[in-house]
Image 1 (cartoon, rainbow, N blue to C red):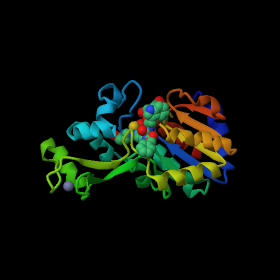
Image 2: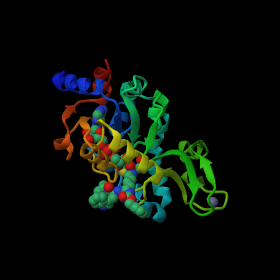
Image 3: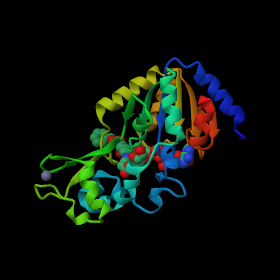
Length: 247
Ligand code: BJW
Ligand code: ZN
């Protein structure tokens, strides 16, 4: 592998970590078959984020979001890949203390990671914006699988059923965000895996870690706007690179 030296360098830094923190984005789940948002095959090539991932779009037309969600179903059915397992292993080894994720797919937990901070929520629960009733994801999924989007309604009659994910224009869950900021300040090694680092406030976290003295490592397929702040930049697939680092 061409980035062998960089992988070696990253492995040495991580082996000495006292408080490693891993920060992940859609790229960590790409090899589980989940589409990423940006880039050539990204979801935003075919779907308008203003319509399907913003709270304003959702309020205008929740059904459009549910059409988009039929693609997200794979997110809930997908299996963890070697990157998720390697990250869980780093926690078991005591090198990593927390995983901060922007993903809503629960794959870190399913791979065995214990301390997972979900910055953008998860698909586990769906709330009615009118009466407040909460549904489990599975109750909604039944309709999606049959393509019966019109039947996605609350008992109260409302069509405004919203999964507990964070849309553009919505605040992040404040307790999760403050824990993530605290972890970023405490980190001595901060490892970004599979994120374009363009969505805020999440993208501030590596900056906070650096300002507080952490060594920064990034494993990402494509360059990001923030590569210049990293000590080690590894261009590669998370599912191939992360197991190499743990080895
Ligand atoms: C691989 C790989 C492999 C591929 N291995 N790598 C102007 C400036 C600054 C900020 C703003 C602004 N205008 C608006 C804002 C704020 C806005 C924002 O940041 N917008 C930017 C786009 C500019 N942020 C918000 O609105 C946030 N809320 C907020 O700010 O609230 C303020 C507020 C306070 C009080 C009251 C009210 C409001 C909320 C952000 C929510 C983000 N939500 C989404 C959708 C979730 C629902 C769903 O899943 O459908 O979250 S957007 C989407 O992007 C998703 C992701 O979590 C997020 C980040 O994307 P990520 O994970 O980085 O994925 P990609 O696809 O971008 O990148 C993947 C990378 O992996 C690529 O680089 C590949 O190369 C790589 N890769 N295969 C390794 N195998
Ligand atoms: Zn209701």
